[in-house]
Length: 348
Image (cartoon, rainbow, N blue to C red):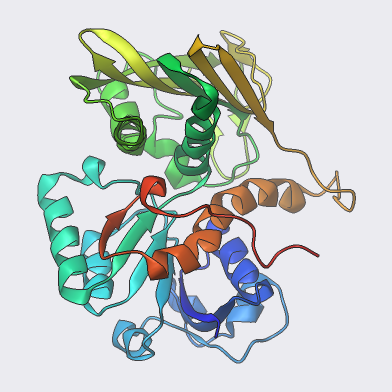
């Protein structure tokens, strides 16, 4: 029997998640949560651009919980501890893309509530996405060929001009003045889930960290940028670097780095890799590159098609993990706790 799934929201990532759930014979869409009032009552298929499914979106949480799904695929822009606790206490598992890996960034009290909710409902909570999430798994797999690991780093390096989510971008400091006294704190708060991922990797490697720190830097626009979904004035932040470092005895052992830029007019003019680079110093030293390219039927002139590639690679790790999450022991789970997560059901 397929696993019964409720898709929670149909935003940028949620739309691709819902379409993937419908396409996978191992999963069955039984409900859809609507965050926006204008989506309530509309068919879930219509909301994501596919034929009608006979499943109406609703904001009635009790009605969705009464469906007794095996899992909620949780894809809001930001996680809500209250929402997750309510779902988990009802005995429903969660696979999430919403800034959740271990819960560390939400604070000890929130983690304790989530663990207690899992215990009461005998349910599991798993968080993934592309980075943090799948990229960290790639790094751990790459480290599996080493007999000594001195340090391990992951770099995400992209031009995010076409990522049309102004609220997300402002949350990490885009558009601010570079001399804003709160800028570093904003970048740290907005990227705090990378600290979760450092913890997850350290746990998987059996390393006890002394400290986790965040360093950041910015680049500024050299001319006004009108991106359609937001405006960045000349001289304001149009590029962001952050490095989340797990340290042992003052030495960085795990380093999760991001380098994001908007457009071509930037100072400094940072290069980007348009993908993910894992570097391991040890024996042997290892470099693993993950590059993303469109399929042959990609419309190179379509803004929507191009943006969807990023949404797909964020949504699918969580969707593909649903069967494993449903079978996992109760509690907050990471990739360390799950069997190999593959694209089962999507081979054409």
